[in-house]
Image (cartoon, rainbow, N blue to C red):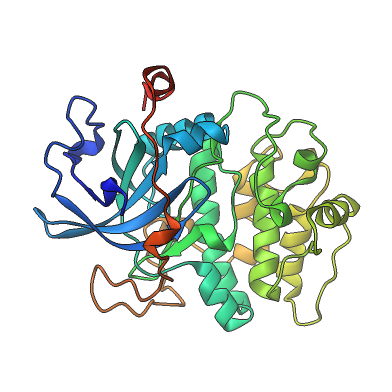
Length: 338
């Protein structure tokens, strides 16, 4: 087991504890369950034994972050999450690092991924897709008002809280923009044309991804799919979409207006910004203040027996996590602002 399976922190007030030794009270947090693993890290359910509270700890190997040239992405993720607060975005409580790993502590969202519910259902009804799309629109509007582009919208990054409301997670590709960015990142099926063409992109890519997501929720699979990424890119640039007969015509209309190749004519990226999306007739029945205040009844309420319930996640074996090396002083300087 990685030495960081047990870690402590003084995380109140969302304050980095650089002035504390992260291993000084090593037994405060106990890792109970690994709920996700990635290229250079994992997420585990932890229990704060002092407060008897369940939280999610994201643990990243700094050596692997450097090797995979992900330092900027990780720093952006922490900096953005530290400054935002929205009902449909996962809440970062605390962060620190030692000489091997970065640690980010979040509220534990126990309902599991929207991806799992979508795959189990095959596809969502028009009303269910509309509910989740509305909460995502609320979150994207908030992020874009702060010049933050999310860049990784997909069902795997949408969690359901205990009450059934949405929590967007994984801000590894998020970035604060002044104008445009040229980094190629994201999931192939969800990439906007301008990312593939390396034209430079902005917040408009999130509205394209919303169109892909609404289609996937209502149809059961993404609009642009192929066995290899280059085939996917070709289909995205061709822009041809098959429209199943069962799809609600008003839903089809908003998807079409989001999946516009010319980003200057894409819904959400024109003069009125997110207001154009919110005013679309697919959302005409909504009071957007009620959406933000979580007054709408969620269509799916996860089966959860207690706050630390892990039954809505697959468990990843501890052996998936390899031992990590300590950084040398020069490498540690790369994370001096973490």
